[in-house]
Image (cartoon, rainbow, N blue to C red; front, top):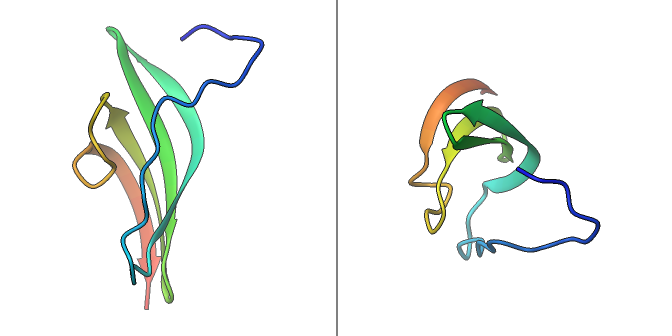
Length: 74
């Protein structure tokens, strides 16, 4: 990961129609060994979840490997 002076969009993921879950990228972390992680907050109507996922190019958040998760729900 290298800081750059301008914003570069590397991926865009569309929200499925009618989906109650809204993923929100909170941070990106270096996991070592050339791996990158993303910290994502997912909120629903009566639930909330924060996941640490192993980022891979071309893979959407539904198919990324979850390394750590904390959630609450009704």
